[in-house]
Structures are given as C-alpha cells and as structure tokens.
Length: 164
Figure 1 (tube, rainbow, N blue to C red):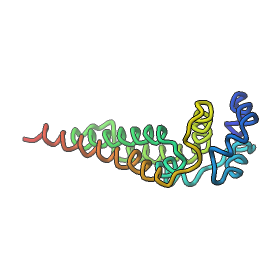
Figure 2: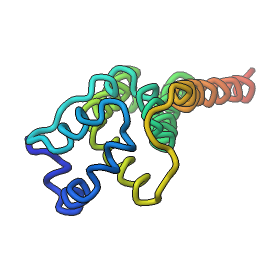
Figure 3: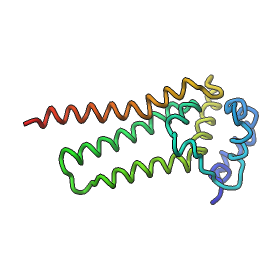
Figure 4: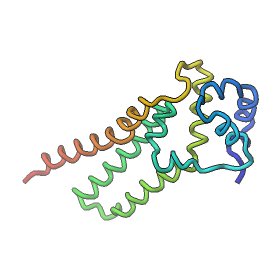
C-alpha cells in the first residue's frame, strides 16, 4: 500500500518545503518520523495502536485526542443504550468490535494524523513545539477519563430516570 502522505500532492509539497520546521516541531525522533512521512509505504504506529490517547497527548495532539475521546464516549453511550433498553440491533460484541476498530484505525493512521496535526500547527505558526510529558496527563484526561465520566454520568442519569 502506498504512502498516504506522498500520494497527496499538497502533502508532498508541504513535506518538501517544510522539512526543517517539521524537525523542529517533532523534536524527539524527528528523523524517524520524517523517514516514515517520506517512506514508500504506510507503517503502523504501535504507540498509537496500544496507547492512543496517551501518545497523542505526548505529541501535543489535544484536539485529536478530544475527538477520539468523543468517539469512545459515543461507544460507551451505545453500550448504555444496549444495557438499559436491550436494543437487539446493537450487541455487546458489536460495540467491543467498534472499540477495537477505533484502536486499529489509530494505529494504522496514527502517523498520518500526526502529520496532519504538524501541518496544521506549522501553518498556524503554533507555539506547541516538540513533545510534552504533561501532555500525557492531558491525553489521559481527554481520551480516557472524559469518556468514562460521560458514560458514567449518563448511566447514573438513566438509572435515576428508569428507577421503578
């Protein structure tokens, strides 16, 4: 499978014209990511696959982490609907499969999402340069705790509303 960054003309031009800025914004493992962005094939990002929100927070992709958190919260809400209303068209295994699919998509497209985030930051001349260890905490809050809180609060409200 071809590289999704190199296959797009605008992305290829951006990569060629902003190589130094990309290295500055990536900071740690800059050459590694640049080789992936320029490479002939897609590569799975195992950090994004197994530690998605934490990796995104470390790489300062807070908006993307929020979007992933919203998707996880939505899947949690689907699980609540299944649990409380016994909806037959949604099964627990379907919801679990969707969670695994989300993890797989994050792993497979993690490098591309990172490239698009870097492209957006460079275009806007954003101050978020490099990596952030405190960003891991933000990733945990946005990608793990927020969906749990939303699903838990929704379950609590549903229990109060459906109480006999």
